[in-house]
Length: 166
Image 1 (spheres, one colour):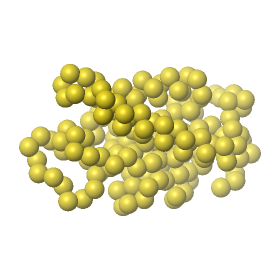
Image 2 (spheres, one colour):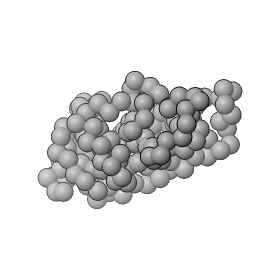
Image 3 (tube, one colour):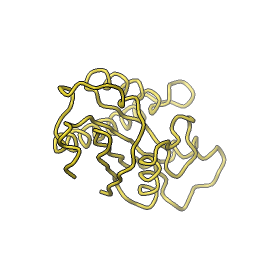
């Protein structure tokens, strides 16, 4: 995993309670587990519930899960576009961290991480397949020869002394 030292402004930058924070090691483990769960849920939603124009796009439905998890665990998650147009303007990489993560994922890295501003941040690659590509790339376009990805960014508040340990 790559490391970056850039500061990402986020809603989590508001005043936080240290009892909501975890060690860096726990944050790394928790981010990986959360991303595995989110990706598995996304795949299940695509396979079982998404049927063309009759349902909410699964990645959009997952944003409701992200919101609920933020309230319950004080962690944040969000999608970023990597090497395809975003389906929502809010998915465009915004911070230096997200821009570097998108570039790293587009270059073939599976994940990208940073410790900054009292948070552990991890971006994981989300491979885009046929259905994803047809919407993101536009209908009636031929298949791409390069692999296409989105990114899933998880941000977890860490204990103040853990920010210095990388």
